[in-house]
Image 1 (cartoon, rainbow, N blue to C red):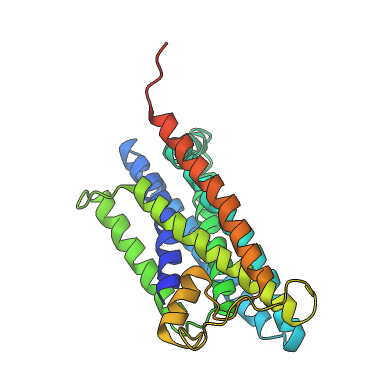
Image 2 (tube, helix red, strand yellow):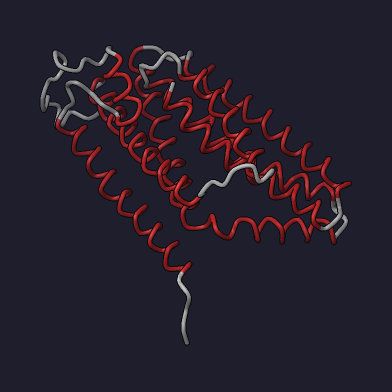
Length: 276
């Protein structure tokens, strides 16, 4: 449940912030009549995202045995790729999103293309929605957490509430620290999906290397227990991981964790005043 909440609260907050920026800018330039197009684009994006999530789940039920393992691995690896790109991109580009959105909104309004304004909201929100649908589908396929979907819904509700309070100036949230903290957790969750994919492919004989069990903690923290499920959701915990699983997990965390750290440093350097 917690993993689903973490994902949707981050993705939902990004999407709702985009909508809030666009609506706030239209109010600022006294073009409130165009807000309806933002809402239409947003609702359309949410509907398409929900449809994609349903299609992902429908596709998952069509596979059994080895085919199901392959599907799990493919969806998980695809989700990892999208998630990694999203986390790194957001950390590097988040400071310029507001200005970029306002420029695009200006261009759409000045050209009299209300459809373009709605499309801006649609594409921006759909990007977050597709990422959420794909990542939740991967977690549902690989997770032992039966409360993932309720947690995801809770995350969206919390994201909507936080966004409302932010724009109502009722709270002050350091978004930079928020995205750094959630980014760290998402990288660890993604590493867990990498590990699960490796084990799934080893189970069907597609990766016949490194299959030796590194250790067995089933008697200490079982995969089926509450602690095991929570650790699996957040860190990809396996009571009896194979050697290749550990290697793949470590490589991902070290390499992309380093990329994430560099993105944070890049953002910090952009904040420092430049002297002639």
